[in-house]
Length: 533
Image 1 (cartoon, rainbow, N blue to C red):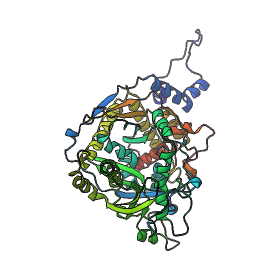
Image 2: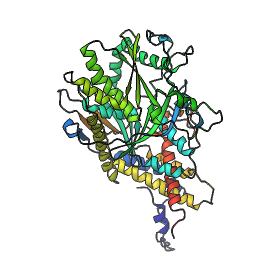
Image 3: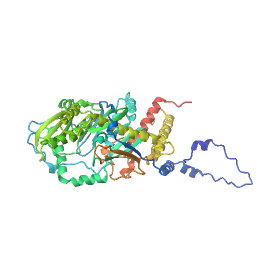
Image 4: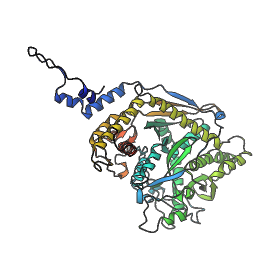
């Protein structure tokens, strides 16, 4: 165990040796004591203790549609903030958060256009970089930093009270799992820090190999979607080659049953009037500006159905994905370019998100099988989230016998000790910053446990799929992280010559953990600014 300085200082003094006896005191010398109390030594001791703890037993959960028909509530998403990625994948927040925002222009001469146009000039996002939750977390840091000082800590409490922070695509996978079969499995990486669950997608090697096998035809079909979005959001005569680095991402809050959720998700475009308002005046402060979700529009493409099988696939698979993706982010309208198999636009169809489940029910009265229920989807997603949170809360409660419990307790100690340090500082000095001692203590959190959530659908039709949540001995690092955090700058960021993966606690960037600690310290100082006597 680390040496307790308080006990050492308060212990009874050692009686001096008799004059006729040699000094046999073998206690640490001042130099040795300094080494024992150094942050590096304490960090190594804590890390070794964490490594010596056996991972907890896996937990399993079966998805059963019969048990998912109970009422599941999902609150309409409310915008928090947004951000943009530019053509070089740099991130833009605050006043520049709408840099990559586009309006729906929908030129009248779409019919007959070839979506393979400029396919050889397309620029694609570098998929070899693991972006984890970086963009989403950076946008929250920037939003909280620039919030009105009177309201900032209330906003902080709201963010830190979230039960789940993830991407919209992750929650879509969770909710759609109840209808997955065959090869529709997936793996997510999961962490719980300070009571909040973070979840990111983890592509397994066989998934990546399967995508490679699909080859050119699959890539062409993917390009058709990008190409169509590019066409309907670009002014006539100013269509640039596709660049998938460019995205505008909305960050929203919602509630799934009793779980507060923060989601980030790309929004393809918005209504023209919402876009035009942001273009004027030039000196408008966009730090706190928001576009409400009723202005969001999703852009999709789909093969124009011409057979019973085409219609079955449209209503059973496409519509399920269209509805979930849009509903979870609060997108009210989906604009669909209908194309043939050669990529030629043959028509345009628009769907209201809330009307899709009823539309599918009506269509499927004339089609055998292939039905899906919105209630089952939301119930399945809520069940998975509750399963994960239940397992991790149980592990976090094991303050001495689980790695997660030890790390959560260590995080609380780091915050408490920094509160004591900052109370000793003169007013104004050190406010909003973390001490060097605190930053050194954070190094003890490097071994924060990461869990894998694995879903495997049943091979038998009508049978429920199953999930397993297990603690990894160490996080596999198959892809490098974004070391520069997309060019974002912040006072809590520190230059480092170490590999990008070393600037992480699990898959979370150091910046987020430091910001969490700083915010917890500020909240504690606000609630009890003076030490009790």
